[in-house]
Amino acid sequence: MNWGLENRLSRIIKPETGHALMLAVDHGYFLGPTSKLEVPRETIKPLLPYADALMLTRGVLRTSVDPDASTPVVLRVSGGTSIIGAALSNEGITTGFEEAIRLNASAVAMSIFVGTEHERQTLLNLADLVSEGERYGIPVLAVTAVGKELEKRDSRFLSLCCRIAAELGAHFVKTYYCEDFEKVVDSCPVPVVIAGGPKLDTFKDTLELVHEAIERGAVGVDMGRNIWQSDHPVAAIRAVRSVVHEGASADEAAKLFESAVSGE
Ligand code: R5P
Image (cartoon, rainbow, N blue to C red):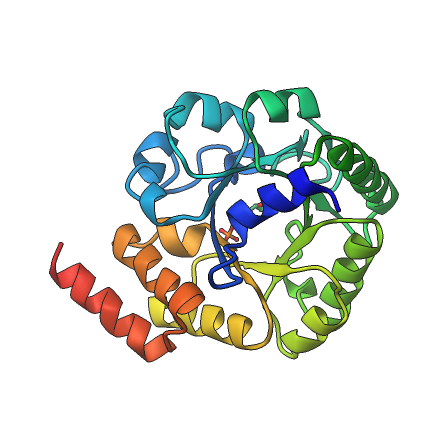
């Protein structure tokens, strides 16, 4: 047993429910000032009390989150590419463990790009990161990235990605929800959280996505745009939280959302 690693992971995946609501605000590392995340501090501050963990880069953490915040940090440590560059998949490791420890990170996160020309480099980066993370007791979250190719998000592809990440030692995996999602979870021996992806047509769609994912075995979400691009982000995160931690249905959470919006 790696006590420190288990302890850090339990700050993120809450032992009380076995679930996690992670708030992803790392998008700027390749997208720049994404809509509604232009001033990260303003986006993050009101949502922080409702998040079990905050996923972000060291730059946004140091500039936009007060150091007395008690929310655990999942530090994005891969990057080196941009949305206008040649290949989003060409990521390297941008932040080392000395920095992760200095920033009191509870986990580090990196993307793997399976099926791309940079598959090998990103998978070897993951394996190295896991070995080093285990030395320091810091868990590694592998993100099964698809870059601009959102149509890749089916259960066959995502099962392959999640399983490879787990085989290389990732302690938990972040992927997308998809049809037959249980196949992805069942063939992945470590906990799975889902990203939300681009903003969906309605917030009810988001709640249904989260509910289905939890029903089919996800331990939680690591969600960004469908929360903070909402016109009512605090009401949105509270509603998502009720699904993740309280077993609310999408309908019940939608009612909670409406009543929180009317009380704003
Ligand atoms: C993408 O690579 C980033 O890691 C995001 O954190 C991730 O996509 C989750 O955010 P969203 O719910 O907006 O998709």
